[in-house]
Image 1 (cartoon, rainbow, N blue to C red):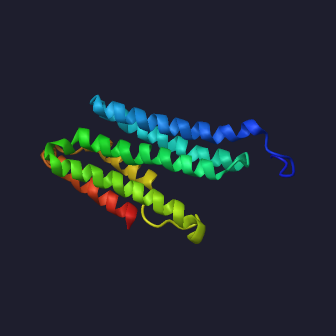
Image 2: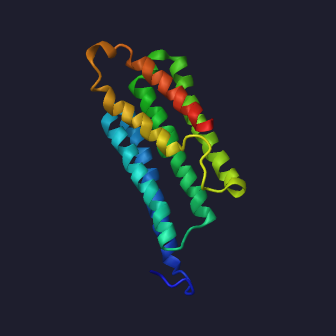
Length: 179
């Protein structure tokens, strides 16, 4: 355990930001995988991003290097990894069959994720981080990923309605994030 009376070494501040950067990178890779039609790889990238997102805060607290910059950087990385990447995955995987409606559903998910993050960042000063208001965006992204993984296990008679489930999931999880 670090002595709280000693100053934090300057290089220690980079540690949590490396985990945040890894989360951002895997979110970016998820988008590339989705565009390439590699949906399982895109989903795994989002899950790995969730792992990195969990570790960045832990490392910041353990090294006593939490900062306002880190909080904002983490939110931007979360928007890419759990807002844009799942929306793009859903669009490429199932929603493009709906045309403009599919675009709207994917955008609603992404926009609600951005709104959720902005509200969380502004409200933590008044409410504190102890209570969540709305579904956290990493949980939303992981919900989408879980659906992608389990859709391949659906019985054949559900294959024709999977795009409709994806449409409902996209809008439903988006709304839950801002509820």
